[in-house]
Each structure stands twice: as C-alpha cells, then as structure tokens.
Image 1 (cartoon, each protein chain N blue to C red):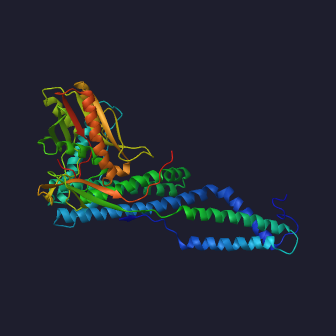
Image 2: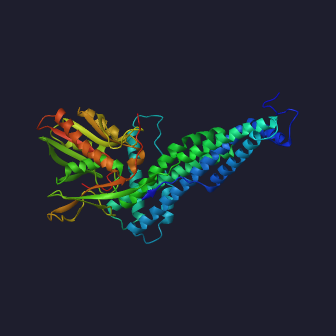
Image 3: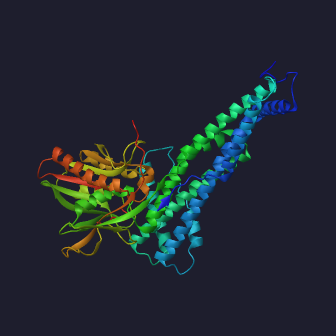
Length: 372
Length: 129
C-alpha cells in the first residue's frame, strides 16, 4: 500500500497528510486535465509570440507611414490608404487544369505589380521612380508582416474557441519557423526604408561589377542589358534596373535578348542568392546546372523554355545565405561571396567556351541600392 | 546597434531563493531530527532531493541564458576609380552602388561607392561537426 514509507501509514502527521493529498491531487489533475494544461502552456507561448508579431507589424506600419510622408510628400495623411494597402491580397489562378497556368499566373502578377505601383504613386506623388520601387517593396514587407500576424491570430483564436488541441499544437510547432520569417521581414523594413542593398542583391551586384564603365540599355520592363568582354569572350550581362527595389522580369529579358542576337550564345550563367542549409557558411559559393531563380516559377519556366528552344547550356552559380539574410541589409560575408562568385563565373566561362564565343550572364535578385 | 537580452525577471529569482530555503528546511528537519527515522522524515527527504534537482535545473537555465549582444553597423565603402584609394564611412540615406560621391582625397579622381554592407560584431559559436 505504501508508495513511500509513511504515506497512508498509521503514524502520519498533518504535514504528511497535506503532502499526500497535494501529491494525489496533482496526479489526478494531470490525469484528467493533462491535455488542457498542455494546451494552456502552448497557448501562453503563442500569445507571447502574437504580442511580438503585433509589435513588429505596428512598427512596420509606422515606418511605412513615416517613410511615405518623408519621401512621397503626400498632400493628405496617407495612413488610411496605407492601411487599405496592407490588407491587399492576391488570388492565385486555379490549378485544376494546369495547362497554360504559367501565363495566367504571369498575367495576374503583372496586373498585381502594376496596380501596386499605381497605388504607391497615388500615396506618394512626389517620389521618383527609384524611390517608388523602394516604397513599394517597403509596403509589401509591411503587408507580409500584417498577413503573418492575421493568420497566426486567426488560428490561435479559432483553436481556443473550438478548444482544438490539434490546431493549437500545430500552431505551436510551427511558431519557430513563423517567427523567423517575421524577423526576416522586420529586417527588410529597415533596408527598404533606407534603400540599402539586401542579401538577395548578390546577383545584381555581380552584374554591376561586371558592367562598371560599360554601356547598357533597357531591354525589357525594369531590366537592362550591358556588353562586356571576359578573356576574349563577348559577354552580355542582364540585371534588374536599379537602384530602386526591383527584381524585373529576367525570363522576358532573356527571351528578347536571345531572339535578337545573331550569334547563338554558348552558355547562359545565372547568378542568384540561394538558401543555405543550417550550419553552412553565409557567402559560400556553389555551382550547378539549371535556372537559378526564385519566385513563383513563371520566370524560371520562361528561362527553361527559351534555353531549351535554342539548346543553350544553363549554368547556375549561387551565393549561400539564409532567408533572413536574403531580405535583410546585405552582410559583409555576402559581399565577399560576390567577389568569389565573379572568379567562379570566369572559371566556368574559361572551361566551357572558346575565345570569340558569346556568353550571357544574368544577375538575379532584388537590385535595391545597386544601380547599373 | 541592436542588443539582444534575455529577460530575467526578479520574480524568478525570488522563487528560486524561496525554493532553496524550503528545501533546506525540509532536509534540515529530516536529517537533523533528534527522533529516529520517522516515515514523515523520509517523505521530507524525498521532497528535499526533488527540490535540489529543481534548483540545479533552474541554475543551469540561468547559466545558459547569457546575453549575447550583437552590434550591427552599416558601412559604405568608397573607392577611387583611378588610384583605388579606399575609405570607409557609415551608410547615409541616398547611398547606392556605384554612386559617385565627390573626388578622391588622394588623386582627385572620381570617388565611387564600391560596397554597402552590414558588419556584425558578434562572436559566433563554431559548430564542431
């Protein structure tokens, strides 16, 4: 009968009785309400994260309003329009019949981009094109933070209302990833409000370094192309038009460039920032085969299509960084990675082409803070 | 500059002190009691050792939570396009690569923004594998 000597024994004092009752009460409470206790603990963690998320999205909103007022000089208070902007959404095309979905997606993305630019222009009428792009990026980051906050709040309140252990558990398990994404967007707010280059600008920075002092022209909406020479090879370099925050449409630009060239290029090299695995060093460079470009996939599709059409080998050089580093102000390690990537690109050109041949290099990424 | 600090509430410290006092009272009563080993003494001893485990656990948590300050500074690297003279200053709004920002103090050539990056002054823990 005795769990410990003395427990339930005859020679018990008041003190022992209290200890025993408390002990049994705790066991019984955990037996019947264990799941609820666990849920309450998880809920408290989620609540704490929600406070942090609310702080982040409020700060992002304030920074957006302040920056718009400073740079856009609106005649009226932009706050109500910015609040409306932060609630904007995008409906992806239906994928039940996937044939032709890329072009539908591309069209909707174009419309989205255009309407957002128009809206930012209305909110900040005095901003020039470059500032307009930065403001658009800034508002998009604030919009994403707002969306993260709303989604987490929705599932938290829904889980609590329905007393769903599973919803709260799933949300709690996803919290570290959600908070890391939110922290990344918080870093982006600083970069976009001041126009600093971000980690994702590694590709455009490489293109800029190759094009220093060279002529360039606009080839597509928000894309430029310049011509240079590397070890006897004619090299066309593509990048988004800076220094405003902009990723351009590299797929369309590459298609136009390839259709306009008289000589078929021997190689296309794409340079982009890529997500590193945990434990890997930021700024490390790796090479591979394929179209190195992120996003929803429309630009990658176009690049793969045109490379296949002309039977041109596609090489990829990536500069490794985390998601947070990709949208936060550029780190020194990434800048040094770009220097290493230039050497890697030169080596690929040397080893895979002959003198007199043509090569295309595409610097992929957001070109904020990096001009031509 | 950004500083990360783990919040150490004074309430936690107070609870820890109270726990230590309680554990010593329990152990003191059970170990130094004049009477022979009574059943309640063994219960108190068990609870006392449980308390010691809790204290060790709490102390370990306190030791692990060492604040790690991170200093972030955005720098603009300026370089002369003629003589490659380099200069580094803090980032200013309006800076972009490769903006020309005056003349080189060494040779008078165009002084260009070569790089803009963030430098972090934190000792990163090396991963041993």
